[in-house]
Length: 345
Image 1 (cartoon, one colour):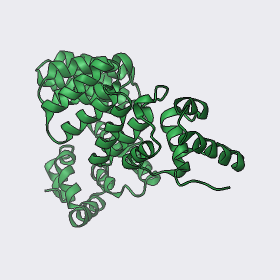
Image 2: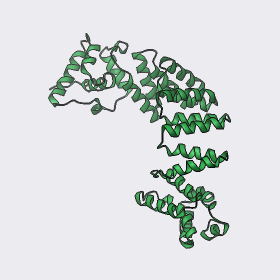
Image 3: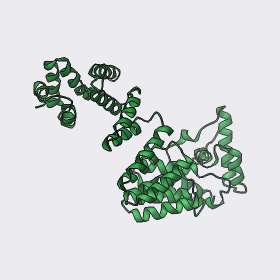
Image 4: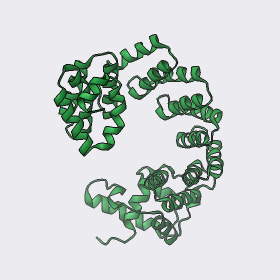
């Protein structure tokens, strides 16, 4: 069976723009004498293979090749009335994440070829401008994206961060609240609202938002820790103690969670449990050797001074960056003589 060079692009375009539907793609290509036989050839190839062939088999491809496919076959993108734009947008978003800004822009231009005014292109243009530091231009594009599609969460997210970074905190809060209407468990939206309230000096509203976040996302350790710290900062100790008790029921699965979990155990004087948690975590994650420095506190409390000193010396020699990052925090749980004993002082 003879295969044209362009045949693989039929699979790519089918999946990118038509959710894998040959029938929908053929309706948009109806009357195109260049394209109809090519699509038929792709379908025949699939029958020969005896299974559905995904467009991803023929990736990667880029905006230039896709544009060339349409122009070569005299298929105007503005006539793709049955197409969906999500696939091209996902490619553009991936290009943004990979810092391939020219490709992201080119894909956004292809989206404009399908529909002159669309939220997808505006979101990409806005994000590109923000990444280059042009917040005014970025906000203009992102606001346009929201006007075109008020529930388009990626544009709302980018816009809320752009407002926050330009100190437009009230607008950042308002935009993030719109995100939560559509995505109630969006962690970044909650954090943006909390940080905006803090910058506005509205601590009570920040605390209330943290409480809402912890109710909406009960497994989110970061939010509980932020709530705990804010309560301590504002001397609401009874509430802080309750939150700390809640945090200590959560099994730490990430390095930062373990560090905070252990620190809270140190605060309550539960050094034995802290040591068990550290050793258990290191047994499960032996590559996280930098966490071993946390052991110096429970070791000192047990009187294992030389063992604690050996760990301190090891970090001074091999992981000095982490040693100095943790020295003050760990020292705060020891007396002056204990710090001298293990070599912190």
